[in-house]
Length: 483
Image (tube, rainbow, N blue to C red; front, side, top):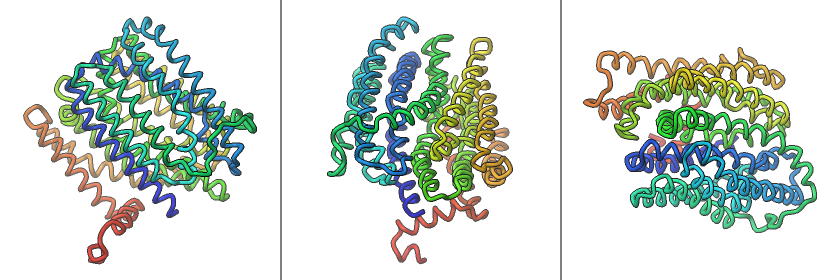
């Protein structure tokens, strides 16, 4: 468990460093770019993300879950990654012209063509990155991602100030990928295979065709708002919706990404050791919700001051949407690791079926944007999350994950969320957040909720509090920790 704990801490450090740069960059760029410019980039990046998901083709997951990993299997995974990634680069570049015509916006095509160039480079770092994750060696990952985030930050802010508009975000993304590939190559072990090979590529392909479907449909569900809203309402509404979702994105970058980066290797390690994945699953959901539910509940109450502080007054139309999207995310946390649990146990076919079943309700829910506007789409995602929860529980029965066990594991999370949110909610009825007090609400409300959250963890004796104490004991001097 020590290795998992260290990996999670390093993954959290990686995410928090990137989050700080992301927030600073967002604060600056949101005041330099218009909603329409942000919307153009958001539409284009969905196509890139979909191609990127297919590009990976489940290679990382194949290397992580493989019980006996050999040099030939690593070479085969590398070869498969090159073939698929370069194919996606060509398709993204050629498809950029049709996408620009469909959305009646040349900028969508420009951004897609810039992002397509990175697909040629990615395979030369992706396999090594997957190896680090399999070995739960997150130190080189933290360094590589930090260098990438710094490069992307510098390029985005510099070009935005010089008036490059949405292209500043495109070149920022490209530069970040270039840096992370170069840095990963530097940290590659000396005995790690350098050249691709075809021996064993069939096994990698068989696993990848199911695993890739999982993440393709997951990315489709994530990017569907931009694709559907962009066609129905235009880039400006896409920008508003993306900023509403930005508050949820803060939580995802701070907690979800680092946790999910470790979750599958952890599940796979438990499965290889013939342990109970069901226990690991409910423990993971408990840890995620005890952070996520209080955060999302408080963020829904503080949506106005948060958006006003981070994005500026031109984005205030996103406030009511953000409140609803926080609810949708809170429901999704209950089945967040379901695909990874199935994959780690070798259930790639079942995991891909689950992902397809989750995405279909999301697409149908988003279609409500046509008769009911952006708010209809937001509530559609809440309904889709409820359907996804029911479907996930049905598929997880084979792993021993019952609804009763899941509810019992998340009961402390619900109690802590109410403890943090109820006082702020009651105060907001007496003194609603507005232009005159958003600074006090944003800073004071957040600090108050953080103190209540830590106090609640301590009073409940929650396992996360014990992890916080252990981590603090490692970082504090011996005299301080003893006192």
